[in-house]
Length: 58
Image (cartoon, rainbow, N blue to C red; front, side):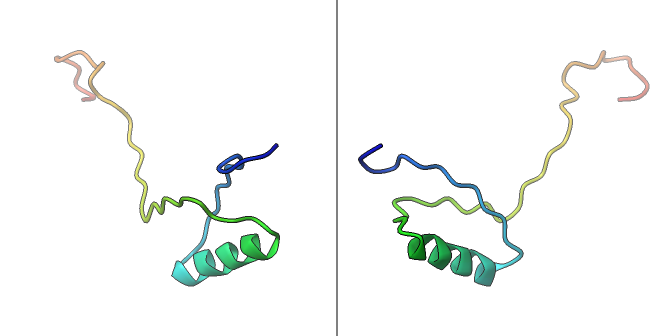
């Protein structure tokens, strides 16, 4: 492979220091970070739009 933006990496850290350390570790491996997206909090909940209007569990 050649070019830029040809590797996609997901990482998880407890705080900003973890993410900085991981970024440095990736750089030390020879990877250049072209773009990054930081998700601070992610919430998942079920979609209730498919439930019947008269459903008591709604």
